[in-house]
Image (cartoon, rainbow, N blue to C red; front, side, top):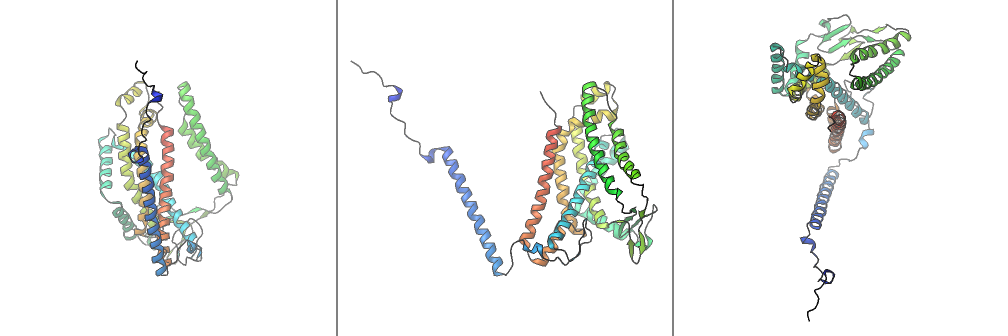
Length: 398
């Protein structure tokens, strides 16, 4: 009589797999070992650095930020004097970097887009001139371009006594561009608020016009209305505030001009060099993005009676943006980081101010760390904004 076969539950238990043969456990072990080794390496480097600094009697920490800077800064967006602290000096340098980067990015995008579209123009002369600009500016290192513009302002333009004055109240010399500005008045603050209100109104109108056109097919003159709001709101505020016309006109006194607003040669040279260099790359990005759109899209739009400007604005560019935005983000980051070359022509950006601080205090590690943190923060903020904009403008696929 044969015994019944054993059921699966009565089968011999399987042997446990050793941890060194289990891929998951082995992977966790390797990661733990790697983290420990990196931690030990970081501890060794830090302790060794602190020991060497202590031997050389070099203080550590950021306490130096509260000490008196004792050096002047040629250009400042906020009030600053040599009696202020190193911390305030670094804030001045940071604001100078921020101003150059922000203005440079805005003008670069506009200029690069125009040149990129011109590169695809059916007009032979316009297309060739755009191509020459792109090839020449891309092939010359940005540092050499900064030196060129710096030398142009200091060696070619006349001194303040013989300053060029193409327009009344505007003077151009090797000390920079000096021009008249409205004299201080309380209404100017309200004009700035009116400009912000106009920008918000333009944003709302653009969204409404886009939804209305998608629903009814009828276009709305967004550009003309936006221009009217952008000019009309501040102008109306100016009239209601008494229409002040007093001007702060620059006057030559001693060896330079006093009064008005002065844009230094260093700032102008830095801005021109960064814009012209980066715009050449942005133009190629725009050209590639436009050419990535199927030619049948523009032909279909023109067959519906749309004008070339509307075809570009409503059909081509919205589809090209998904190709343009990623490399455009890289160019914006390059412009921000290339602004650190300002130290070569004497513009007091963050790197220049931090370098002076390091020379006076000996806090090299802290100073370099602050430089890295500042540029890392600017880059991350720019990338975050562009990633948000990229998701917002991407085509919705079914």
